[in-house]
Image 1 (spheres, one colour):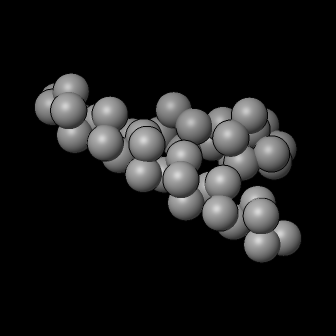
Image 2 (cartoon, rainbow, N blue to C red):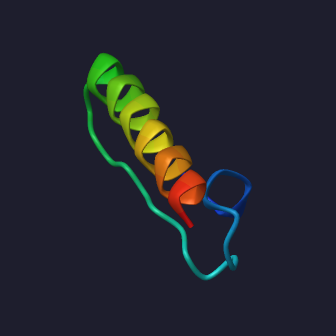
Amino acid sequence: MLGPEISHSNASEIIAICTDHAELSGFAREYFEYLLKDVSKVK
């Protein structure tokens, strides 16, 4: 789960990643963290 510590937003804005494949889950988390960090730089 990605929450306010990554997106710097309200606790109500949480992204959940669900998969049975551990490597896919890890990749997805890193990718979404990367995207959210870029968004916070643009704001």
